[in-house]
Image 1 (cartoon, rainbow, N blue to C red):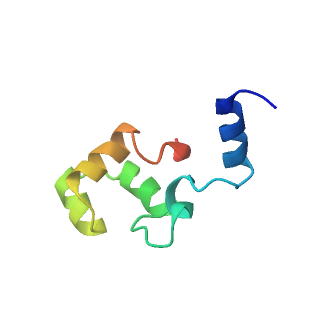
Image 2: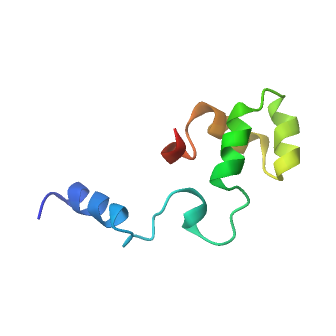
Length: 73
């Protein structure tokens, strides 16, 4: 037994938490780990990338900055 934060982290590690990163979060996600990797490598304008993947430009911005899909960094 540890702190609350330790216990929460342990739940995530063991797959007992509803808070899972990325595509394992739920069945209705638009992006996969593979697509996020391709987005990070894509040098085009964010608006064009967003249109290709059916997400917003802000989503692309957050992925590129490492604010979203952090588990893939």
